[in-house]
Image (cartoon, rainbow, N blue to C red; front, side, top):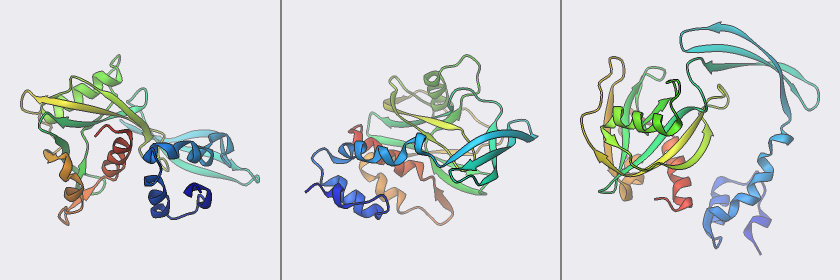
Length: 228
């Protein structure tokens, strides 16, 4: 019997993962069975209106009126970026010719901590395409050039707070061409990790460095797709 027939959406994540890994096609075969649980048309909550309560240089705070399937109403406080277009953000998963994954150790003011993340940037230049933004941000932040960009997936950045989404690109065989651009308020250290040792790296970070969960999440998807 197909193991998926015995599982429900409420099953533990480890149960689903164990089941997926035993499928002939791995996690890729699980997609058709998962889709019905995430059908937007079946969403029990609808947004019926919104108003701006504050707007700054880069962000605005918006209250959205929502109504549930049973008629209950409420207000959801959300944040919108004022300076981006398209999906809003591009994320680059870059691997060098030597098989090293490029990560960044960024100091982030909201959490007042260093965070391990992928190179990424805002789509804030008028007329610039997603791939142009991805190449520019990778070069500025790491000094590496991406000759090829493979679309991986689009995903929300913080779905409970903002509608901004990130387009993730895989950049294989990137080449180092020069020193990264400096920034007055961003402190970025490029971290090169052999792809085969990235799991060990993520599990052994020092106490004062946090891990952006998009890193293991996107790597999981890319492994399922056979990209890395």
